[in-house]
Image (cartoon, rainbow, N blue to C red; front, side, top):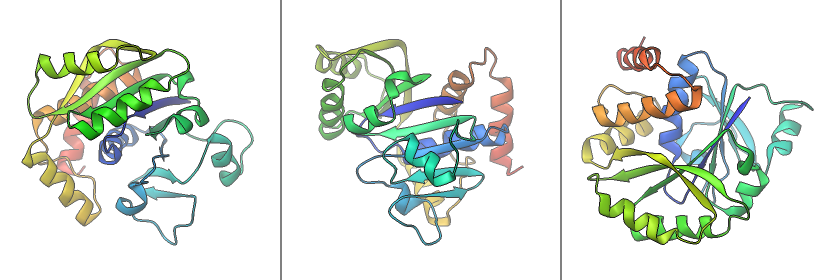
Length: 230
């Protein structure tokens, strides 16, 4: 079972749903764990009679909301050994949940942010509380790919116990993608058809990293099938 951490104050729910859609279409059993303060998944993902903590299923993706650690999820499911999933996608925005879900031991961790002041400063606040150095790959939501933005993030994180990986993954912040995501939420479906090429390419790259695949042809075919509704 792989555990992948997505750390930061920026909203990551729709990003994780899109990543999980590709992974489940490729026959992986996926659990998204929303351990954030706002628990957006509680409002975006349909659930029957949600309680304080629960697991619901949405388009073959399981989503856990309200749990404080993997042991609570195991108790909820009724297992004592490893959880019955191939991949866990853990959404965290506090140091407490990073520690509770032991993301320092994850197979891979991403730091997700845009360049608005709130996302940056809250994100840096999380990084400042790392007790051990953690390798992180940047996922950056921006209107443009600017070296100055990345340099500013590097400057803010000086002194943090973070080991930045060389690669950076950019997602466009533009009305087309935001409109598609809003429409998906409204109709309670995960659709890729109208997403921008750059957005889908970035999803492809993340999935390729998660699966440790040297070739992305199968992932690209999967994305095409999701676009066509196959």
